[in-house]
Length: 329
Image (cartoon, rainbow, N blue to C red; front, side):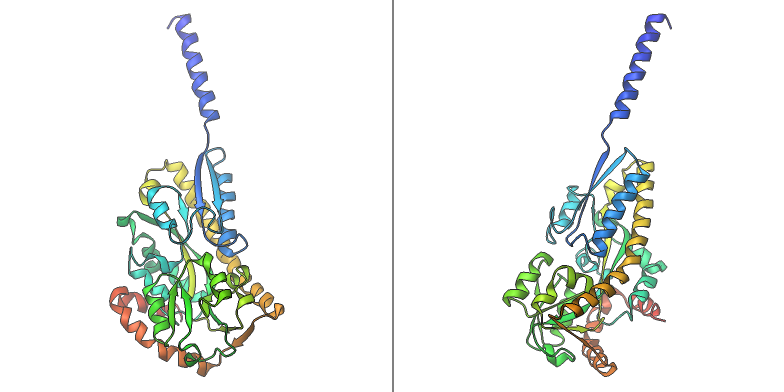
């Protein structure tokens, strides 16, 4: 190689190096529908922090909370189209892709959030993360929100008879629809962002949610009574587009996976703390009273929900339900 060729070669190498150094980081968008102050909101911000720390200059994570980018009805389509890379829908949102995840909607299946966590970490629980890859969806982890409580604009809320004829907002879930119909209520499917106004104007009489959501969305301001039922769980599955995920450079995928694992541990660690804190805040606000159910009250609800379990046992799988029940021990 003569001197002129060496100079040209050196110039090309230098240009390529400068180009690589100045290459814009990969932008990945994380969209969710709740407030930043919730466990999911905080976990999403932690994921951003960790991913950008582990992949400096390679990845920029943009987080869009409170339905700023996509609402309940559009976020799943958005991730499948590649308009957003990460979303964290509630586990109730996946029935059109797999019926097995309906196990999380069965009322009074789990005794507490520790049992939920134990099942999610089991072989059967982890297998559900990959149960929708044929539909283009890859699950990356479970994020806790917490156990569900029931609220209404009525004074009494202890037994199934207390909700007969009332209208309840639900997520789009066949199990949750059956849950309320089993006690003579009228379930109304509605986007999360619309719930406050619907409660305020009487479009619906009540709703079910975690303490942190009830507080952050101010549902307690437009409800008279919240029953501490712990009758179900609102958790999320963080998902991405399976094809996009598999096509990532190995180092990027590894870094994002590690960041997600750590953000999951962080978010789940604070979820219980948030719910306990927000329950106290609601109590101190004095706008809605909290009713604690007796053992007999809970027994009445469990009995009323038996037909719901039987109805969905075939779709979910008896073995999967039994696996979930074992987590209570």
